[in-house]
Image 1: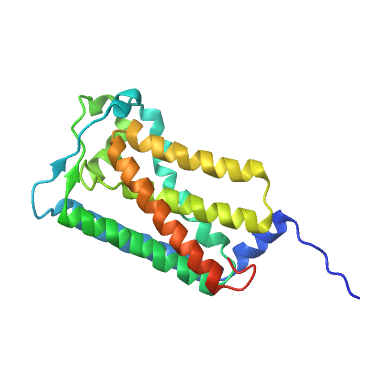
Image 2: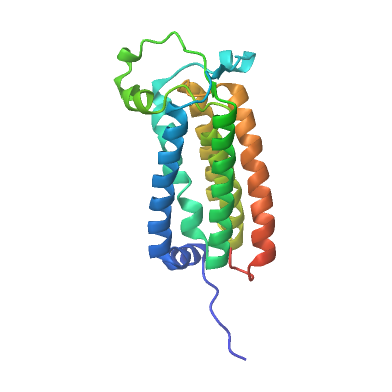
Length: 224
């Protein structure tokens, strides 16, 4: 009976990165380009004046800190990891369809029920590192936070992927902590209030659970 070597989790990840690598790279870039085009189109052309989201006690507990900005923008690296680690075309298609559906739902909500965060009493001139994000991503498109929804969606998929390859608990825990840090950063940069974060987390979790259920049913063992 022939025995085959069992790949380590590092070897499995390396192998997964090579699966459909060009499709993943090009697809991710095209998806992000289309997303930003649609996002800013909705942001800059609300059909009615946005409703200002109310503050809660939790918002008062999270102080503003410009140091949260690098964590905030790390989302775009974080959300690129799950598709890079997917091991089959079918699972990749499931991931793409569901994350696209999540974005379309949130964009539809932004268009039909535009919301904005309250303007904080902050002198942004004192925080030049925040100038780019405040100039591009204004206080609109607030609830549900698409930033949060996509982070939570990615965290669920990464947990499944890391579990599939037998990644250590330290790596899996680091993924969860980064997701939580991204959620915190949306409030600490004053891009969102707590209600935006809560709504975004619920949307992200719901779409992740449904998508992983479909991926688990539709793909061969190891395909995810």
